[in-house]
Length: 219
Image 1 (tube, rainbow, N blue to C red):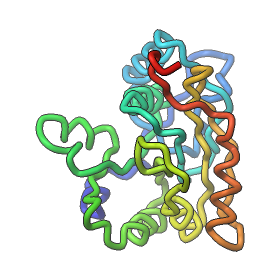
Image 2: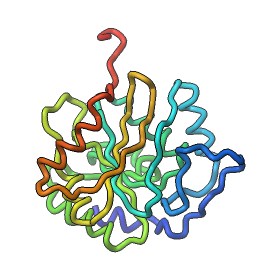
Image 3: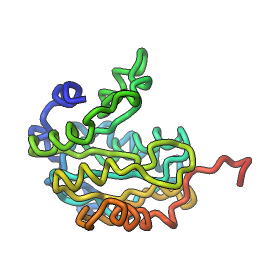
Image 4: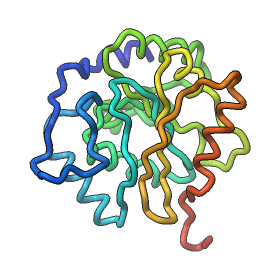
């Protein structure tokens, strides 16, 4: 993982863009957040989300480093919507995916959009490696799906909590609400509970009213 992350250009050099409109949307990224170059993908992302009936609520924290957790992850459709969100925001972000997603012919596309392949059978010290990236970079945003799978789960994986705690960075809770077609950004919280189980339960409660994707034949 470290070698993949090391090949990513430092976000410090990324140009910060000021929207051409006088009324800046509340979800527009703040100047301290790492952002991508160019505006074409931003327009494409916004167009795709608008066509699909999605809108934004809330805002990302105006911080140079933070963890983003996205829930509920229930469908393969979450990925293209999430990618459109990344493009629309212009967010320079990294995300972890199973190694099979990075095979030819789509591997280059996944890496170009922030993906880092992870061998699920050999995770090793993934938390330590990720924490190291946070502590050695001036800007770094990592997106994780705490459920770890599209299947319904009763417990979240704790990796996001341990990374945020060790790196002393906030956690932005992003709800992908298919029921209302809303990308809800926030709240942003700290991993400051005495133990991981308590903290994860507290954060998970923010997603109680978020509805994952349900196929039309099951509604």
